[in-house]
Image (cartoon, rainbow, N blue to C red; front, side, top):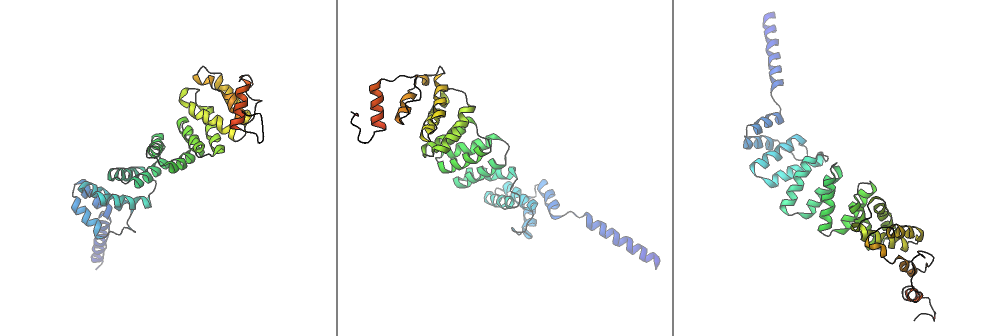
Length: 272
């Protein structure tokens, strides 16, 4: 009897160990995928599949199988379900971005680009998002993204210039001046940035920061670039501020005309 119980306990132990060594569902499917038994693996996974409760591993396996079998839509659905649980997976987000790009879904493409740019340490991903929005003319979205990355100090000079110009064109002069000030301080004094710098100068005039506007004008006049001959003095006269840029002489008659036409004084009889 004792011997029987001993053998029985060993048998039960063996069964327990044997059961523990049986691979789980995902391990079994991984083997099937490795052996290219895609249909068998898919059937095994779908037998107990519940999109809401499936593990991220199962969703990825179904996506891989669907990709191998050419079930593109199913692959995308599995990837979408997966990122609901694991939103920081850049590899899968890039797969989703590719799907939207190839399928011509622009809105989905942009949203996936946004998600990638937020997570990726690569500046190229951010550049891709911003250039896409600019090329497609989605200016409000572009402004939102530029503002987000500008606040984090991640924009290149060209992008700072673009942010400032979007604000300038929208007549948001204070915001334009802030962005363009960063450009002016960080970018070389080359012709490439002349339009943005001129916008910076005008935004300063608009917000009444004449002293800084004069400082910008002087820094530009001190270069050997063609803009050194730009008539900054007349721009100050537009705002009735003849105390600035006095070293640049303008004929009195021209000054009067500028003052009258651009900033006419009510009831003045001196204007032609």
